[in-house]
Length: 631
Image (cartoon, rainbow, N blue to C red; front, top):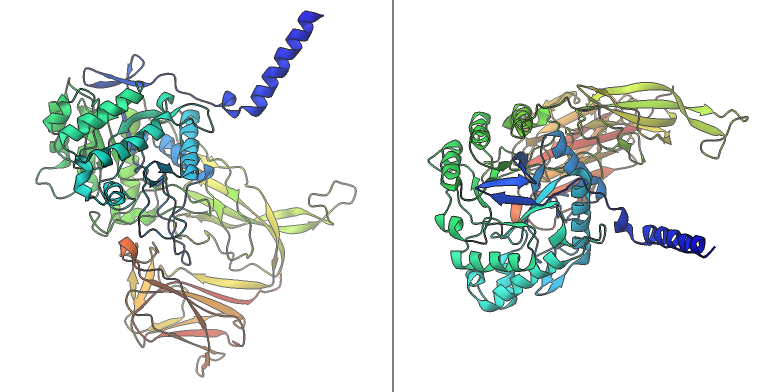
């Protein structure tokens, strides 16, 4: 009896621990810390090599730029973190590199999340997000490279550490107080216990290595001191020198506490990426593992040369710049590269889309995928049939969004009629109606990359009534099961939605209108717009009288008005007064233009709507609502 009571107590204790200590159930697919010897990386006894992409938004999103949003910064959520890592897995990646541990800046907008708030003061919410990232990496079998500090101003770095103590950014390398402040950040990170897994960061196998910083101009003495300090706190992980170079510096190969060396490659060097990578690999061979930490913004043939140089030499791995993952609000995050990217290149999405045609995204990422598996010594498997997407709440049939599926190249939108419930069967919604039936395909080939920070689909021809919606994901391997069902969506009005990729939805345009596809960052990442000047006109025709409209305009210079008028016959137009909402909080570091929403909701009357510019203007989207037709 006493033995049975003891067993019951042990069982009860185990249940309580599983219930109240979540990390006892933490998942990991990783068996070993990555080690280094003879100039190579190893996972246990197997050499570890990889080809993958950087994910700059993994720790903090800097690209949340919907039209009306004035602060682009937010922390990623679980859906976004999982999508990021699972997307790279689909591409054959096993490693990713985040951007840096961020530091608060004096010009940060209110609510901007940063990791380091002051010397020795840290943002728990930001680090709980990193907890989730490492938990997801363990669950998916991924390795992460994390740089401790930035050389540049984008997300706060050495200049901010220096300013707290009244020093200059170059003092960061030599001033004892600044070095002590930076070490305190390192100490906090390495000794932190993950709130999701219960594992200290220093004991977490999902970290491939710690990087001293991103593209830093660190003297060898600083690198030696910081690398030694990292090793004094963490004997499990490798340390990578984040010195900014395209040609390996010999001192990095000689510092004993530096385990991995790295280079970054962008346009501007006389030698090709491939030449530089091959020479660097030869220099590091047999001494230290060599990783190409970033490379990009050149043509596909030059990227192919770099990739082949990584695969064919003793290089341990390489990561392209860069991947942006799916957005929790639907679609993807976008990031144009107006600087080194020459206002042409943008962050990649997977699967690729014709929206990346300017930089050959489809062909380049197909090549990346085949080589990402080849460098691991395995053939590229078929892309799996995508999982069902998650349809988001629908307030209007012209604004349908979903959280997309890894591997999906397009989506099928289906509309179902409301069905009267059989009273002898259980109710789906607690009322007199069942979830929709008689499903019809409204669209079978929706590209979730076509719109940026706007709904993925508008059911422009929906009849009046009560409707349900669901979505399926497609790719070359098949079509998913349907998403969750959303509805009933009560439809009284239908909406013409024009994304202005061309002039197909207008009935006339006068003047010198031009399609605009560049300068997307300044235009809140709107990838297709039309640009015009004073006096230029667009006309739309609706099947019924216009009830309301919204026009999303961007002003590169001064804000001017847009004149609106309506007509029944196309000959006599009478003016309509529109309200004007300006969403602008300064040009910021990317030189943002001024977003202005023009809208009117009443006293319109007329089947034709005319827009006339009074100054230099770009228009990215037009929405015009009218009474829905009957079934």
